[in-house]
Image 1 (cartoon, one colour):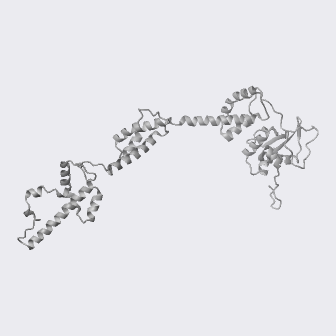
Image 2 (tube, rainbow, N blue to C red; image 1 turned 90 degrees about the vertical axis):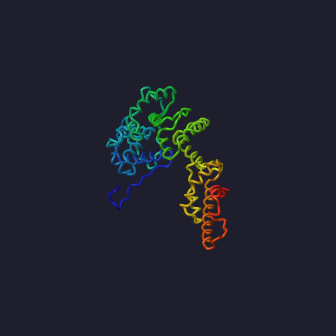
Image 3 (cartoon, rainbow, N blue to C red; image 1 turned 45 degrees about the vertical axis):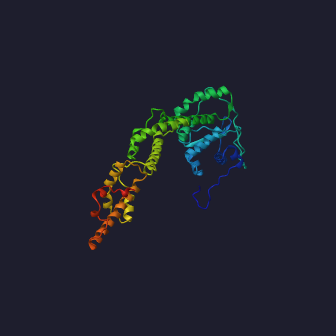
Length: 375
């Protein structure tokens, strides 16, 4: 770019036809080199016109590329048989020594062309030589772009040469084919290494048991150990019938147990099957909330609980809801208590009244055998 703000930088021009033939980046660099060569004296050697251009100058006139990009595009042009390069890779070399792959007379330099150059003539295709080997530039390029070790690439050389010589095919760019071959094998190698680090899937046989970590997680969730042990055969059978083992057996088992445990506890809490009352049975908090709405004292209800449990355990009867039964029991005694209180107050005002609701008017046997609250 010019230092003067009055003079704009030179525009880059490329041929669309050439870009569709050899690639956009390659067309830009090729025609840029062609323009630079028009103002330089060529060194004709071996039937080719050789030119030398500084790397920094190219990077300055092509600021959208770095040294790695410039090196890559130059190698692509060389692999396509368009450029001949004598200089070391541009990653380390200060100059680019190149020639277009076009024969010229030794006493003349290539004439400037006013129009965009046509696609250069490709080198004739040939068989792969028996002692062929990749260039140092190609090995560095694969190491830079794909992190492929040089030794890994060289280890694939013998098979590559044997394969293509046995097929007897010709090619214009054996280095490009070798690069594709090595990159494919390197990706496959990385995939195999990744799979080797994976934890192998445990065999799901009748001896399978959840890991210790899985058992600790389920124990912290309050799931009974007996319930877990009973669920293992069902879990094994399910996955064996599917014909495949899940990769995360323990995670799948924890998920399965949590679902089954939630269903089990819900069925116990809301069971509709009649059952005997347990000796340690306690009414739920909902029971006391309902009694409180009826203005029944919590302490009074709690004092009736032992008698309630003893009676129903002795009767050996089963009920679908002991909470409902206890609510009836408490309401009955609460109402009876108020009736007795009212009867006592009337007795004080009406002495000699024959009120049969008074305790003194009932025998001890009647009080002890009164079970009307349980009906």
